[in-house]
Amino acid sequence: MDDLSTVWLILAAAAATYLTRIGGYALITRMRTMPPRLEQALNAVPAAVLTTLWAPAFFNSGWDVRLALIVAALVSLRYPGLIMLAAGWAAAMAARHLFGL
Amino acid sequence: MNRRDIIDGLKGGAVIALSTTPFAVLFGAVAVDNGLSIVEAGLMSATIYAGASQLVGIELFGQQVAPWLIVLSIFAVNFRHVLYSAAIARHIRGYSFWQKAVAFFFLIDPQFAESIRRAETGKPVSFAWYMAFGLIIYVSWLLFSVLGAWFGSMLGDPKVWAIDVLLPIYFLGLVIGFRRKPGFYPVVAASMVGSMAGFHLVGSPWHVSIGAICGVAVAALLPLPQKPDQSAEVTH
Image (cartoon, rainbow over all chains, first blue to last red; front, side, top):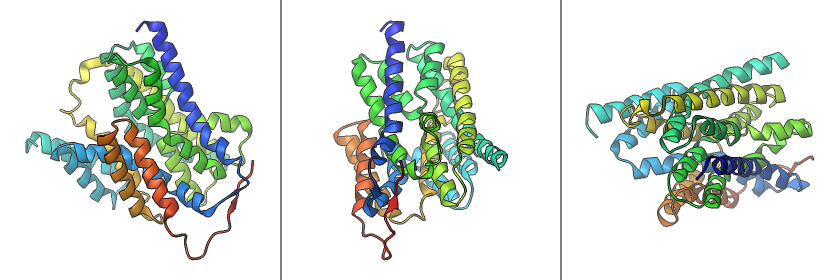
């Protein structure tokens, strides 16, 4: 692939991404009222989508990644995001370098 | 008040900017490793501005995949943003047309999650707060993508430094933050099962959209709360 077509490919992907970011708004503002079930579905969007971004790492990886995610999940019940991130990272490092998982 | 919003936004955004730094560096390094120039890696971060999809794109750039399929894969990974922009609509009614057009460009996962959280705690999702929050993340994302590309393979194997676990941990943390929402557990379970089924039966990156649709469908089918809300007005 030459340089110019790479640039066009990137710009096409950027346009497609922007479409996804305005698309939902464009659709929803055409409706006058929001049915309660639709509202309930929209409220579930963040959890539903974000789950798909960690589930494969948990189920398809080894116990090093699983341990890191379990530790991070437990820590996140009490502590803010960066501490959770650090705890999970430390668990993965320990699992890989100390326990050879 | 405006000033207060900007400071709030910068503070909240800085935390996200810091936690996305490793991924920006990783993206830049992987991009160069897959044959992109530093400028092209920077262009991706500047115009697409969606980490997971950028990494998917990079992975496909390295293989002999038809260009339209690369664009479609990036579109599939980013399809969740359709749901974001629909869900955020009622919180940004006060924005002008151009403010909306600009704001939607910056609508990444944490921007959406924090906007909803802010709205639910009763604070205004003002344009000033939104842009302060978004821009500090954007600038840092762009800067560290280019730096990562610059250093290229100096990072070595991301597994040695456990860089690869940061992204899933980060997303898991965001999910756990929503645990008090009604229907949280059935939604997460459906999304988990759907995404894993999608992963094995259809393949990546479709598992993202498939899992999300499963979770959202379950939410739509769950019984409505006893005291039903009046349907919310949606203004144009």
